[in-house]
Length: 120
Image 1 (spheres, rainbow, N blue to C red):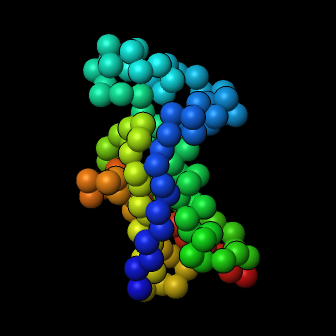
Image 2 (image 1 turned 180 degrees about the vertical axis):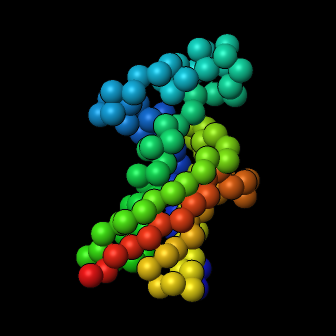
């Protein structure tokens, strides 16, 4: 079974707030002019921000209690300000393992990975 969860729109305010709490103030995340001058189409979201939102989506569809024992992802594309994201979760043959993928509004996979849960 495949579960889909909307992460909504990634706003500049969300990125700014994450930069504040994470202390990752790299200007590619915070300064649109700087980002564009350095070859990016706009500011981009922090990878760890999106990974955290993916865990929130997991918890929305698979209620704790459990412990995440592994969480392996590969970044496939940048998440830009104003991207609308959707997480897709699919339980694998082992009931503790889920494929987890995030797509933008264009259907482009931006992150792919796998998460293992321990329910004991």
